[in-house]
Image 1 (cartoon, rainbow over the protein chains, first blue to last red):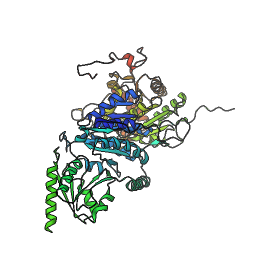
Image 2 (image 1 turned 45 degrees about the horizontal axis):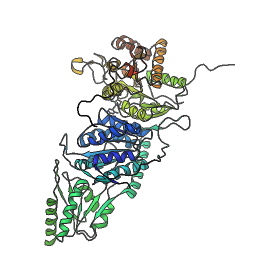
Image 3 (image 1 turned 180 degrees about the vertical axis):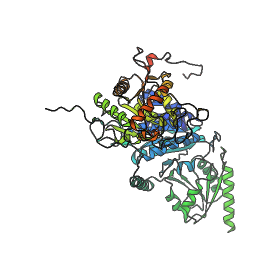
Image 4 (image 1 turned 135 degrees about the vertical axis):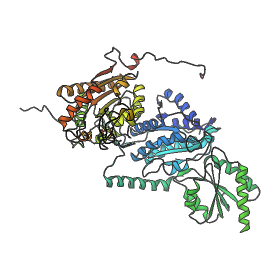
Length: 355
Length: 271
Ligand SMILES: Cc1ncc(C[n+]2csc(CCOP(=O)(O)OP(=O)(O)O)c2C)c(N)n1
Ligand code: SF4
């Protein structure tokens, strides 16, 4: 690994994408992700690669569809309202089994909402990134280092499973600066025999398509894709376990709220409360194995999010009624403080004592 | 010895079209395929099919093909062409696809001067969904969703696409043709061929609008449909060349455009 440099989260994503061999970036400005596009606009042309500011998020994701369909490593980035517009194209990419990386540096919603960080796009990212039967792999970094690492990884797994991959950060992670060591330049290209880049009379024609008018054909396609999803669930689930070995209270938090939760865990530990943190890194596939590994010993779960309670559904599904699952969160762009989370831990610890 | 003087173009698959008998989509496909053969570009051509009756176009051409979302073909074609500048990229779009839902993508691909070729089928109606009003339906035209005739006070006016696009600096060729007579078919073929040749020569964005028919949803025989088209559509959509930068004496759109400054700082310049 190279020397550490100080970078903004958005820029670390951009630089790591370049190193992952991203050949083209199609974007449209929206706060708080714009530095990413600005970085790309500066660097891509110098590398002889494609940077294009599209006329809309809809156009940008469809440009990704076109470029990815020819086998290129393609990327777009946006923030919450823009991702809603991209949902059409994400569905078409999933339907045509196209790899591609979509960065969502989220803000509060619904509607125009605000521009402060929030995690309210969890459902959209993990449940319904567009119409139809499909999933998208969703990665949730919580440091600038991880933003660089995960975007690099995102290109790899997008190609491996022929699926769109979303990096779900938030405005706080996108905007903050931390030291980061950048990944190595990727030089070897992934072989994509399915790509429609002109057959040159050397192979049968390739078609990039999501239309299957015969019902059986469409069902077979979807079944095949969901079989692939089972492999993804098996191989790609990831979570960070922080002092969970003897923990009786398990906090589950991702991204920026996991950073807050971690500080609260440290403070609670210092006063003798047995609390630990599970930080999902993959939001889809959800790291149910991580929850499973602590569910027997844990007495209670507390989910901390920057929304009205969205990931808490996945924790409840994983816990499957075996233990109580509490929720604490702020929305609208308010970031929970370590003290607030610590108070929640204390409250649960006392409740526990009352039993 | 007998000589073959007419056969299926190599660039067309040996399959049955999904179009209604007498539909002009078939003639348009054949012309594109003949041109791909004549230019010898089947191996490097990538086609983008629309949503509409020609949604199955991926099955009809022998080159690599993409199926785009409704109206997004210009954006998809942009993505393809930008990373594969040596390929020939064409988009094939109906009036609902191009002039309604995909208008932003159309105007912006044209204004960027994307070096692509767009074949625009204007049959003044939504064919595939069963004959609803299109952005190009004529004033007074009865359709499933304008049962009393298109009322311009309520539904607005039809869009003349090539006239609109011909105003944009990025457009190299904007021409309107039709297919009702052998002479017009030849003219159409020359226009489409030019549109492909301009792309190969890097001249800029080219669009050929083909004033077409939809016998099925117009409720007319193919012959009567052509007559209705001549009587009603051609006066509103006059045939002709609306922009041809080479005919104007320029090699490409950038030579024609008045203003192509390299860098114009406005004080907020980064070192
Ligand atoms: C997002 C979206 N909206 C609507 C439709 C339904 N739809 C399918 S074809 C079509 C109209 C196509 O008309 P046109 O482009 O004129 O082509 P034609 O069928 O006449 O050849 C519509 C509205 C769709 N598939 N996707
Ligand atoms: S519905 Fe109209 S446009 Fe569609 S195939 Fe039939 S005649 Fe052609």
